[in-house]
Image (tube, rainbow, N blue to C red; front, side, top):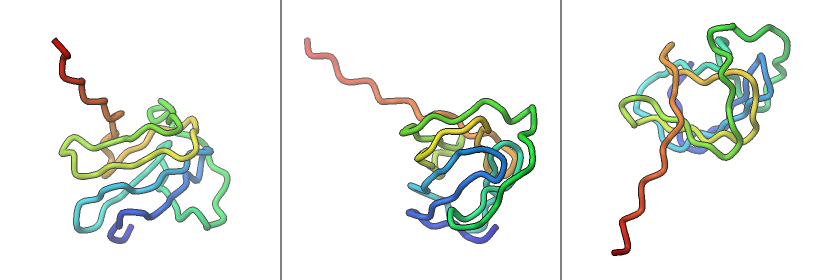
Length: 102
């Protein structure tokens, strides 16, 4: 996969998941969903099956990040596959705790 830019949209080839890149590190990166590479949202890609090890699902409106925090994807359409970058699963971004109002 080529270098990834913020604003780029991808979809899964094996489930309904669609994502938009919010932030990405420089250089090339391999993004996948359900164990198969993500494809451009306009590409005609269908078929295949979700890898059983990559079947945690995605949730609409949630942001997924890598461990380093320099890659962030926004889920625009949910699906059954789970997202990964370079073979490492992405995790759901946690909301920051609000300061107490004492």
